[in-house]
Amino acid sequence: MAKDRTLYLCRACGGSTPRWHGRCPHCGAWNTLEETVPAPEPPANARARFSALRQGLAAEGTLARLADIEAADVARTPTGLAELDRVLGGGVVPGAVVLIGGDPGIGKSTLLLQALDALQRAGLPTLYVTGEESGAQVALRARRLGLGDSQMPVLAEIRLEAILATLRQQRPAVAVIDSIQTVYTEQLTSAPGSVAQVRECAALLTRAAKDSGATLVLVGHVTKDGALAGPRVLEHMVDTVLYFEGDAHSSFRLVRAIKNRFGAVSELGVFAMTERGLKGVGNPSALFLSQHREPVPGSCVLATLEGTRPLLVEVQALVDAGGPAPRRLSVGLERDRLAMLLAVLHRHAGIATGDQDVFVNAVGGVRIAEPAADLAVLLAVASSLRGRALPRGFVAFGEVGLAGEVRPAQRGQERLKEAAKLGMAVAVVPKANLPRKPDAAFLRATEGLTLHGVERVEEALEVVRGLG
Image 1 (cartoon, rainbow, N blue to C red):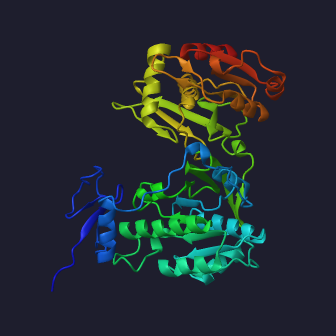
Image 2 (image 1 turned 30 degrees about the horizontal axis):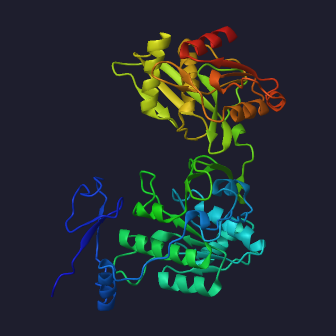
Image 3 (image 1 turned 180 degrees about the horizontal axis):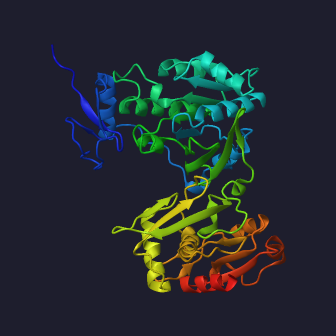
């Protein structure tokens, strides 16, 4: 009896190879090849059509000039959760496909169940497809969330063909597939969750959403590295990619937009996990600021930007005597950038930390990727090393270059307005972020906030010494 031919598909790029390799020969990723059974050969008529297409015998496509194509702003429907609407760009878009991933138990299903219930109560037809739980388990969760009287239809199914038939029959405006890794199609012989199954099921569901105009939300698993499981082509198929972040020991959850064709990327939504589900946090800056009775050394408030939202985050630094090999550890910030900033601090400000352990942490579990956090990190490190606290109500932001210059950050005036709104009193910022001729509206918004514009690192440290 002939043995079935197998292929090895790469989770990262989707490339195939007949034999297993530790490293993908197409993209170079390690340990990403998974065994699968190739799809059956297409029928003869399909091969003939493909041959005709290759030979140029197929009909030509219809061309349209870009200026003649009618394009209007997409209509959005609010989900009833203001923080989720912020991340999505204002609400759900008809025909859009959203992929949301996160650690197990982080709250993905809870959030989507609340959003679907709010949409259903607003009069929109919805559908919740669960492949990981039974209908009874979903009903029990709904009752815990206070949604026991919800009229939202639930389908417990993992066969793609049955799901597509239900979507065609019910024609929901918004549908959730929880999760895409559990769905399988009978056209493939591989197991659910394999690269081929995830890619094919996602492609067919995406095509169905585009044809019907329904908003489709796919729930995805994540790997131990925090990346979405399955082929990377899955993220290219969808319109929006959301990541659910948060510490299991904390009651706060963050939803971050990594890709959004209908809104700004890197938007951040903040939720608090309660007994009644996830509740949006309207003023997240208060969560990321520690309440110290007196200013403590090594603490500096940073005015950062998450998408279009300015946030105040406390950056803490601890400098302590190190051993033969001093450690540089950062949580929520780039470790390599921390080593670079310490070198700049030594070279241009004369503050050496070569024999010291340096630990930097962004309070609240938030992850800061923008370089505008450089100045706050340096001031926190210098404060901890000298044992002198920064003044009460102190805030800073600005990118630091290798030459010691302090470069401006984008949307600096909005950061300053957010700092003034939360009662900050002193701000050290790049000089280029200060308005040359401030208007009356800016002066009213920043009333009570003393601004110090600096151009170099040593100048910023000199200003801080004068404030102390």
